[in-house]
Image (cartoon, rainbow, N blue to C red; front, side, top):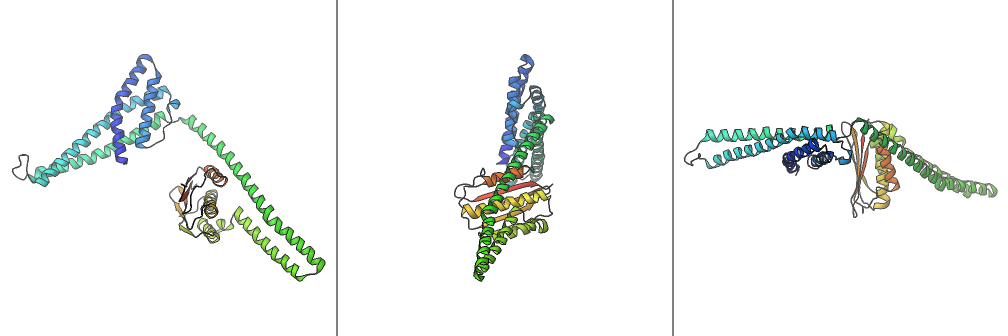
Length: 361
């Protein structure tokens, strides 16, 4: 499929040379920037759709840069057309040699001509190989021209980066505030209530000198200690610092009511902030799968490339997870603040797959 798109893109690029020439003629005669910008935007969409990339839109293209792009891509478009022509010639030559080899006859069909057949096959295959390499080069030139002339300039990139930093900073503040509210609810609704019960039981036990009441107070105190331990673990697991991501997630898997299988590991430990964000991404996905998805199995994959940490959580539940929900939205903001990306695929009926990708540094 990709090869078909590349060939279609080169064919359209060859044809669009005429459009570029017409737009440049209008630019030179009437100084009309509309055709030039429209032609450049059309070329940008072609490269993005068929060769890969992200179109920026005609409103972000300056006329002079668009004209420079069209002038530079005329020889590239013609070169792509020539490469396609040689591709056809090479295919025909190799096919002719192959057909003669299968038939075992010369042009007149009278006697074998193995040297000619060998020459045709060799020449055709060599031409095909060189032409395919040339096509890949033309495609790369097309991408580079788009980035050079139609991509954002340095000032635009700086402004975009400032906007991204401002948005992620605001998102981090919101996520931290939401986490504080959750911790406050855990302490108020859980631990505080148990401590109140302990105080009441101790007061009654002192007045009545009841061993049974003292025993109940001790049991409530032990439950309060365990709940405090759970709250501390939800805030930040000490195992993550001591043993790393895989071990911390293994402890979460043991606590999970749904069977969890963990595969993969990190080749080396990334920055603490990256490791922490990856851990909380997996834990939030585990919690959602156990509480809302009705899953019977959860698979966690940990992977690390040269400059990227990737964690993936897949469950066989009912699906329908909302990326805009408070838990996943908070995670997405936290990951974006580290120049990472969180994707959620959860069609109705399942399965659900949550993938977090973060730079190692």
